[in-house]
Image 1 (cartoon, rainbow, N blue to C red):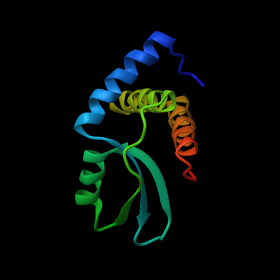
Image 2: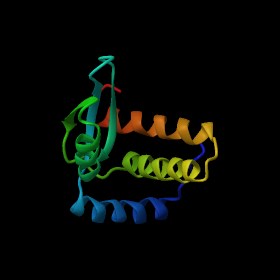
Image 3: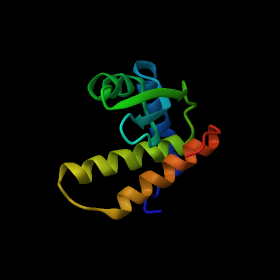
Image 4: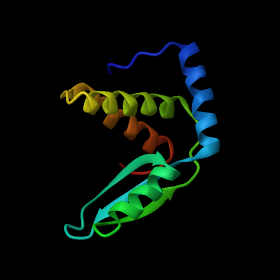
Length: 117
C-alpha cells in the first residue's frame, strides 16, 4: 500500500480521530439500491450517514451495521486513505492507488469489526 505512517503519526492521528469521534462517531453502514437491489458496506461517521440518508434516501436503503467503532490503527489508515482520495478527486485527478488504498483499509476496518465487506 502507498500509505506509510510512522508510529508517532499514527498516535497523533488516533488522537485527532478520538476528538472527531466525540462530535460524530464512526459507523459501518450498508447502502442498498432500491432499483438494483445491490449494496455496499462502507465506513463513515454518523453525521455523514444522516446526510446520505436524507439526500439519497429515495434511491437507497441505509442501515447501520456497526455503531461506534473503536479508534484503531486500521481506522487511522482508513481515514488517511479517505482523505487522500478526497484530495485527488477534488483536483480532478485519477489515482487508482488512492482508490485501492481506500478499498484495502475499508476492508481492514470491516474485518476487525467482524463485518463482511
